[in-house]
Amino acid sequence: MLLIFSVLLALPLVASQVPTASISSHVLDISGGHPAAGVQILAYVQQDDSWLKIGEEFTQPSGRVDWVSPNYTLVPAVYRLIFLTKPYYESRGVSTFYPYIEIIFEIKDATQHYHVPLTLSPWGYSTYRGS
Image (cartoon, rainbow, N blue to C red; front, side, top):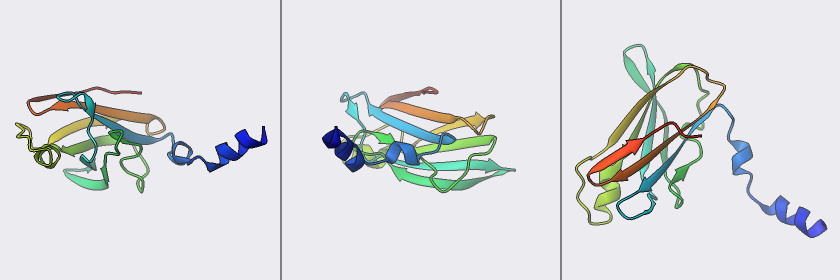
């Protein structure tokens, strides 16, 4: 019992540090069937007629970003995530039709968690609201 408790204390507390009211992402490269590690994601919120940058993160080896805007509290608004795919593919010696992918979505309930996954290949992409 003591050993299990000691192991649990040694585990990182990443999940508990991310608030419920947050945006996460997961990028999968379906052309190779693996996570897309190292993709830069820029996060913005719309304010009047302009965009305010609220975050800038890179996907982890798992292709995930647990929290795209760690220094910003969500509010009901329109948000934009830009995935910089050209540098990702160039680092692998692959040409891509999409230099970046822009996903715009609206958050009406800022108390919820929003997961915005992206599946991509050099010639196409898809997204949806995940959980």
